[in-house]
Image (cartoon, rainbow, N blue to C red; front, side, top):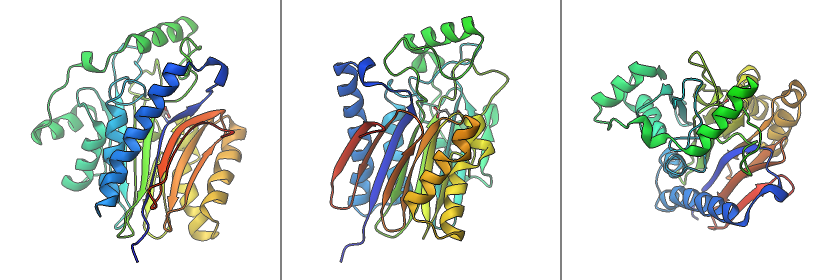
Length: 313
Ligand code: ASP
C-alpha cells in the first residue's frame, strides 16, 4: 500500500472581502496558489522529501508579486525590503531561519541552507547574506523586489503613522501576505516552511514570527507541521506553531481541535489576527483563521486539489 502524502499552503490571512475582490485578481491568485501547491505535490508524488516539497511551493509564491514574500514584499520605513524565512524538518527536528534579508531572491532556500549547511539555526542581516554569497547565491538588487503597490501602501501607512496592515487601496490590502507550506511525505516526514517581507513601515530591524521556530514554523514527525500568518508580535508571544504541536503531543488533541483552540482562543482575544495551516502524521490537513479569509490550497494523496480564499468556504 502506498503511504499517504499531503501538502497545504497559505498566501496570507486577513480581511479579504468578496465585494472588494475583482475577478481578474481572484483568477491570478487562484492560478498562483495552484501552481505553488502543485510544485510541492509533484515532489511528494515522486517520493521526494517533505521539506523539499514545502520549499518548492513557497518559492513559487516568493516569485509572484501577489504575496508579501520575495518579489512583492512590503517596504520598511526606509523604503527597503527586509525578508524573514524559516524551515523545519520533523525527522530530527532540524531547523533553519534567516531574518532581515535584503539581497537574496528566495530567502526560503537560504533558510534551508542554514539548516543543512551551517551549525546554527538563525542567521540575520549581513551575516546571513555573507553565508549566502559564500554558497554562490546571486546578489539581487532591491529593485527586483520593489512594486508600486507596496510603495503606495508604505506612503499611506507613513501618513497615518502606523505599521502592519494598510488602508485598503487594493482589494486584498488588509491582509497579511506571508506565504507558507506544510507537507507530509511518503516516508512519514513532516516539514514546514514560511517566508515573508514582514509588515509595512517596520523600523529598527523589526523581525516577526516568520523567522522564529515555534512561532511561525514548526514540524515534528509523528505529530504535526505548522506554518502561520498574522501579526507577528502576537504570534511570537503565543508561540503559535509550537503550541499547536504541544496540544497534540501532550493533550492528544486532533489537528483540527488543536489549531482551532489556538487560533480562536487567547490569541484572538489579545488581538492577534491571522491564521495557520497544519498537516498531521496521517496527512489530515487543517486550515484555521480568525480573519475573514486566508489564501490557501492543498493536495491530498489522491491528488485532489482544493483552493480557497474566504473563511466561510
Ligand atoms: N507574520 C508576518 C510578520 O509578522 C506577517 C504576515 O503574516 O504577513 O512578519
